Every structure is written in structure tokens, then in C-alpha cells.
Length: 94
Image (cartoon, rainbow, N blue to C red; front, side):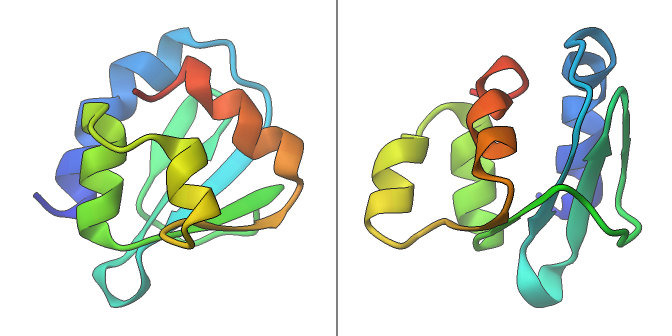
């Protein structure tokens, strides 16, 4: 699954979550997913928080197979910017 397919899968959750911040999932050469409030896109843009991870780890995170806390502690996920935004993501994913 690519970033566009993951973004499409997340659209219903993002639209109804009431999330009022911006976050970018940066998968390196595989692309980005930017969530800004109730919108989601695969176009790069500045955000409150950037989460860097592999495309495989993003798929596992969205599927609920990867614990975000453990992934952060083991270095699979790196967070730049506002950490509180990353912590609010539980309403959108998993």
C-alpha cells in the first residue's frame, strides 16, 4: 500500500475526528501524508508536528499492529515539533 492508499483509508476518520492541529507522516522517499484539521493530502506542507517512519511502519501503525509508544521508544518513529500533537493522534489512528 502506498501513501495515497493510506491517506484514502484515513479520510473518513480524519473528517470526523475533530482534530484541530496539523501533522505530517514523512516516509522518506515513499512520500508524505499531511493531516491539517479535517483535511488530508499527500502534498508536502509545513505542520505543527512531523512523524518520521518507514512506509511499512506507517501501515502497521494505521492497522493497529504497531504500538506507537513502543515504536517511539525503539526508534522506529521519530517525532519533530510539537510532541502534544503526536499524542493527540490516537483519536485518528489505530
